[in-house]
Image 1: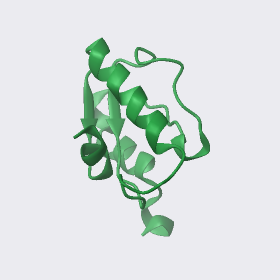
Image 2: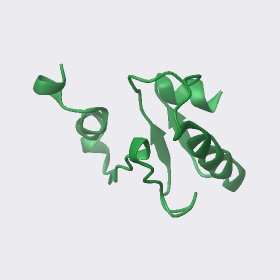
Image 3: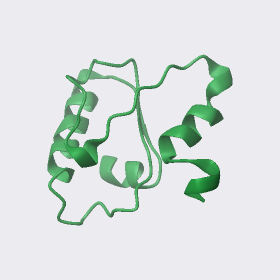
Length: 87
């Protein structure tokens, strides 16, 4: 699937291309996070091959970042893994 359709970020860019959105991808698996919750007008947390309850060192910082996004009132949507970590 990846060879044919690309990664999750590419899938969502193509899906939403006609709506005028601009996208920037943050590879949180590599410890790369946005500067702050208001670095974007909205956030889309995609799917992942990893589970929310796995012991990966990037999960806790992602949870904290998402708490900041929620507290700041910035729109956010989660898809698959994304909705699980938001919950």
